[in-house]
Image (cartoon, rainbow, N blue to C red; front, side, top):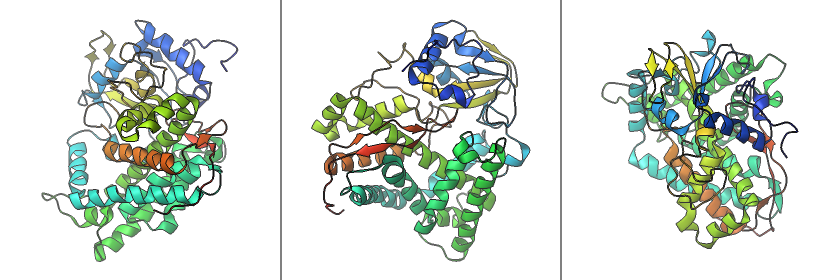
Length: 426
């Protein structure tokens, strides 16, 4: 249901999680208004509330073309000062110093080391594991008739794949899950703890994850295995390797980006398919034919990562004529760019046959395009294949409990129902 009064962009702090808790129709109307106005793509916000980690003005980029332009010019639009609207406190730089917040040449070095550690054998192993894991997850709930879709289905697949990839024991997966929730849910009272403690909550959770992987790294340095942690600790790629602190920062990034975003895409997917039974029926009529388009459309509409921030390294004038000054902050709102009427026909329609679908749900072209996009697409595909095969009438059975965040379009809980079936095994 829409708000009683329509939202006007004037006076809205788009970094305030409270705005993102508004009904979908309100948020879409506010951004549509911005995209229609000539100056709107560069809507200036003079102050932000954010996560309580700092303040300052920023420019809001709401159009698809502007997000592409910024993404393709990393030397001008820097990631090194932080990717969130609020400035990062000094004490955050060590544990959150991952390649997503680096510029070249540091970014290129980290990405090269990590990419080459993913050997063909390792890629094939976790590709096979996705199918086995998804089958086991669905079998575990198949005879019950209902469950929390997020905790018992959507979250379990990416979490287990990443933990298995890194060599994290099954007994520690709950620990990893809880800590990632605290990091990305720092604006949500359920995870933040005491009022004003969101920064401390994030930092403590990240340090706990770093300690976990550093302990594992010490073990793998002494006794190598065939997991990614061992490959990164022991491999020397063209004379380069990650330090243990760099490994810890990479792990924090991996479990956040690879766990949270995929689980939220899967969760939003069930909600969208429940709301659009014609699209679900079409996909089920020929799963393999429609799967690629369905996955891309789910990611477009869900836009699990709402935005990324960049900072200007020099004065710059965009193709649209907007002038920025050195040190200005710009916020690329992926969620809005994925609804740009000049790019997507009827953008608020969920259509698994949409073609073309040049969404920026994994980021836009450039050095920071999501390294795990291929794995995410595979996980989403495999999970819905298993669901349709074993629980074909699965549906959302209530409204989602949404994460209070200006950064992640998250769902914390989503009840679902289905006709119980006996497990068929994996």
